[in-house]
Image (cartoon, rainbow, N blue to C red; front, top):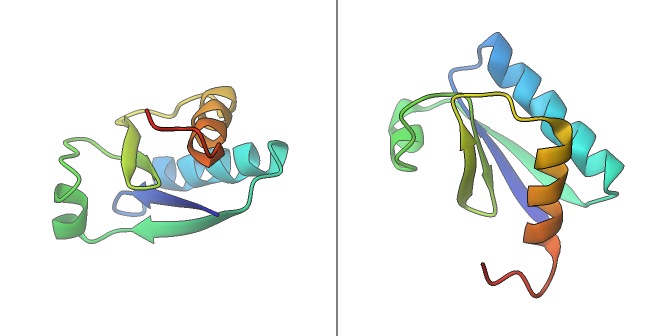
Length: 86
């Protein structure tokens, strides 16, 4: 199962990013747990300067923008594959 974290204060873009991530997981039929991280100290621990940010399996893949669903699906698929040692 993938762990997908949306980092941000809960703004409109944070909600859009969560919707994009959920859509990508649905498209790829991927089993994912979605966690919203709104605590600034927790967000800072990821060395993220701008939100919203997307973290997949503890790896920051995007911050400060809303990536296309296709990109998020690609990142999730790569993180879900057992040979992803990247």
